[in-house]
Image (cartoon, rainbow, N blue to C red):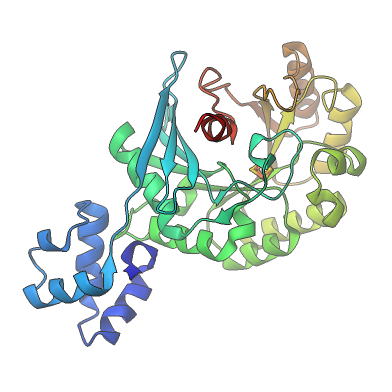
Length: 342
Ligand code: SF4
């Protein structure tokens, strides 16, 4: 059976051409799926009875079930656990910002990147998500939480370890007949899989790129993020320069501040040295406490010291608001809790 939500508009046009139908059917079906949110072919009244019957035999339109929904009492964040067709569980988060609602989506079930501070790394990767499963997270959040205008690929999984499906997902998001979310409203976050950064730069999309940096030198970064052993900072920075040159877009570097680990003055100066002259922005993140890992978030005065040193060097810097700390909103936390209790 074909899942129509796994098809870009172009792929769906070819699908109908191969069925001996007009390619215009693809736009009609896209409208039913993404605009009217219809999943039953019988309700698609501008499609002939014959074609509806044919479609029912060979295709379907998938949906996601919400297995659990946790509403933060502190802010307006909601964390979702979604049940996939094969009974796997993934997480998504809805966040309310002044500029609109953001959906944070997962790209894999679990993750293989083994970042030391992350709950999704515990247990490893189970499988990649299909484009439809990413689209469905957005649609489920949109109908539960309210209109979603921004997407961040910062849930469980490494987007560039599932490159092709993620690119397909972006095409479906972008398409005006699809979800109609512009590239500039989408952010991909990667640990730094260098060959994929080059490939992504060559796509020349206007999608925002965010690098999970979290350490300013190779020794510490390799300890926190094993990917750094394959692609050390020198190579990562070269790939970032290439991305900026190709797209003329600013890169955001995410830096989670962990108490006593990467929050010293010398780390802030090393970070400045690494990034100076680059078209970039630094986002400091007070890390969410993950019991299994034992890291604690840096003290407020350390966060402020870090911010000052970075800004004094002429690099823009923000501190991410701590969201949903009462609902295990950090990536992978709620899924792990649910799997243990299941
Ligand atoms: S931080 Fe992201 S890339 Fe690293 S293990 Fe967690 S989900 Fe994977």
